[in-house]
Image (cartoon, rainbow, N blue to C red):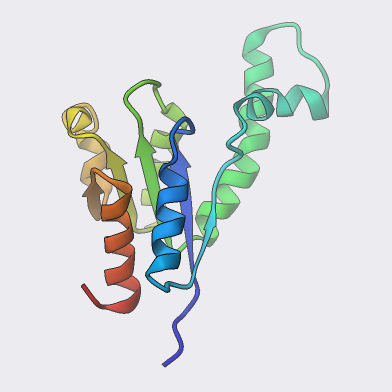
Length: 152
C-alpha cells in the first residue's frame, strides 16, 4: 500500500540543526514527508513588514507589521499541516513558537513539542496541549515513523 505524503510544520528555535536532523532521519526511514516552516532567516523575518509595506517611526509598529506579514505564512502552513513540531531552545525565548503551538492546538492539529528536560516546568502548559513531548530530534523522527508507518 502506498504511503500518504504527510506535511509537517517545524516551528521554533532557529540556531541549531534540529530541522535538518529530523529531515535527514525521516529520509533515512523512507518516510514520505514534506517539511514546511516559518521564515528562518531572523533578519528577513524581522524586517519583512517594513521592507514590503514601508518604514515606521516606532519599533512597535515595525514589529507589528512584520508579525502580521509573517502570520500569513505561518497560519496558512499550520492549517495545511498534518503535524506541528514546536522546538523550544534554551538560549532564546521563542514566543512565536508558543503562539504557533496555541494556534495549532486551537485547530486540533497534533503537536509534538521538542525541548530539553530543563524547560519542562516552564513549558508545562504548552506540553499539556501536545500529543507528545520529545527531548531530541531523533525521538521526533521515531514518533513520525510510528504514526506514519505504524512501525516501531
